[in-house]
Length: 165
Image 1: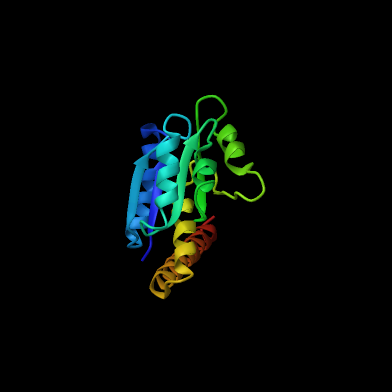
Image 2 (image 1 turned 90 degrees about the vertical axis):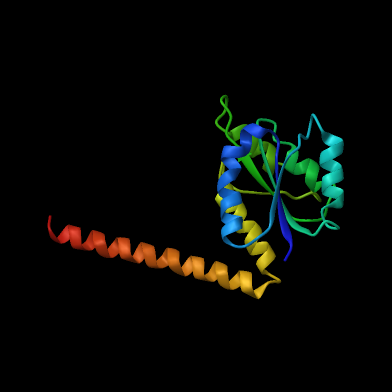
């Protein structure tokens, strides 16, 4: 199975990406987590992206705040899917990072999830990998079934409570 890389623009992004790491581990997907800056270590970020295919990665997740150019820098150096996680910052609550992540020029796409939505980034990465992996696809289908069952149970419980009102 292909691996997923999670690249953070700063070590301060670790609390944001932790749910992605946990979700990928739960699905049995090997994950490598690194810190690389689009602005402070651009050569290292480019080298990582350029070698990602030969290093058996299937998807790259890029978490960055503020200017949030990391996803674009990585995407410019690989044809692997890149998923951006815009990270919230003190000034604009992550809207700056969201815009920087999604406003890519034609030809260099970066998918994006919501601000700090690392679990969704992990699930999107898993869905991409599952296109060629029946076992992983079954895990994702089971997860969706479990989520649906939980909502149905919550609805049943609410209906019972409403009878008492």
